[in-house]
Amino acid sequence: MQFLRNIFDNIRPNFEKGGKLEKYYKGFEALETFAFTPGHVTHNGTHVRDAIDLKRTMFLVVIALVPSLLFGMWNTGHQHFLALGEMTGLADGLMDKFLFGALKVLPIVIVSYGVGLGIEFLFAIMKNHSVNEGYLVSGLLIPLVLPSEIPLWMVAVATAFAVLIGKEVFGGTGMNILNPALTARAFLFFAYPTKMSGNTVWISTAGESTVDGYTGETLLSQAYNADKGADFGGIAYDAAGNHFGSIADTMWASFWGWIPGSIGETSVFAILLGAALLIATGIGSWRIMLSFLVGGLVMSGIFNAFAVNSFMAVHPLQQILMGSFMFGMVFMATDPVSASQTEMGKWIYGFLAGFLGIMIRVFNPAYPEGIMMAILFMNVMAPLIDHYVIQANVKRRLKRVPVTA
Amino acid sequence: MSTEVKDAPVKEAKIKEPSEPLFSKKNKKLITDPLNDSNPITVQVLGICSALAITVQVKQAIVMSLSVLAVLIGGNLIISLIRNIIPSRIRIIVQLVVVAALVILVDQVLKAYVYDVSKALSVFVGLIITNCIIMGRLEAFALANKPWPSILDAIGNGLGYGWILVAVAVVRELFGSGSLLGFKLLPEGFYNFGYMNNNLMILPPMALITVGVIIWIQRTKNTALIEEH
Image (cartoon, rainbow over all chains, first blue to last red):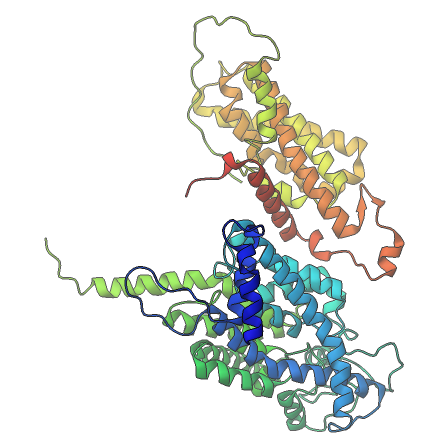
């Protein structure tokens, strides 16, 4: 550590007032505070300071994302070998699968961080404000919500779009209306639909021929296609086209996550590990998560009760295990910037996001993942919810004010 | 889109002003101002609907700009000529009649000479009637000014509207379809290398974002436009 400290102390004079790289001080500061606790102290008056600042907050979320990331790497490899009909057992070739997946996933992560942080640094220097750490989380969320076969340049374009139009235009971290990671995904979804949905994008076949019966569909698209005559009934196929056997088996597979899908969204188990950390540290709002879950269950319960097609008939529990419901609930909807701020607002916001998510998913076949749309929509609505919650509170308290004529 | 009703037209001053040259400084400003400082789209934020709807291709944008330019010049000229005999209570109706007549003319000309573009523009030619820029200029300028400055004002605003439209359309067509004016611009090699046209560019939201980016660039260059908060 002393070694790092020395480096920073040695180059510091270059960046301070009068130094030749003075312009880039904010960039230097970002790197330094990333490595060490900042040496700033409060100058006037007494303030109570919490040890947790934006940087630590963001880093805890990154740690919460690690299980999903690691599982996503393994699953990318697993789906690949499953499609080729090699090492089909879950325990077979653990390292091979992991390495294959890592080689697929890491470049996406690197591109996402490189482009996003590059733009953040540029704006920090241009506008002379400190580099915000918000991107540490978005930069990891973006790869996790993309299919592993996404071309890298698309990741770069989407990241640039999300950071510029989704965030910097509104004034940077903390001012954005929409969740930047979902903005990136929505951008890709509408800009390059053939790379974001369908049967060929989820599983990397690396150009090799696949086994018979290979479909490469996600559970969601199987559920859709069931409407067109194929049999679903809650039972899905894995990448290699093998029947999961029973509804319980299908749900079991989607709980653990060895199914095709976006990199980080498949494993509910890994997501729940992250959720536990977020809730324990108080960073993710449990109110949003709980109400989101309830909203999704209520909507799919309603669908289940009035089912007219096989997708509506899917069991509520299976409905919330499929697709990105859980991932959206834990990591996207709880984004402290774009979610509702008031406690009551969080209940409403979460409930409606889950409710609408399932509704869009079931009703609109053009949007295979309604959760993204629902959360973005609720992001836009969050300030409105807050406004009415606050006004209601004001009204309630005004009633208690004695009227003096 | 509704039109902003500005103050009632000022009665013409009776004092005989010395005649000014055709392209005096004041008259030139009538043309140059709307191109930048008081651009109808990026500063006054008028006529946004059509800017979003018909900027998918450059050709449509050019035809649309020319149509609006023609209607604007005709409307401004006619209203300016009859400005002293229009009863001010029914002036909006009179303006609408003039504009509607001109729009129908333009529509017929387009149908006769550039039928395919006319088809593509569909209702948006007819909707020029409701374009805020036109009603805005008639209300705010032609009703209170002589014919010649009114024509210049119409040209300025028409061009100001047009260049934004074409700029947005260039961005959208280039990235959305890889072409300009219908000619494939990006070489086939690009696509073989994995490049794909951006589908979002063809959808209306991207037009709004492109206009937003143009406003952003304009305001960084022209800091006088930035509002105080």
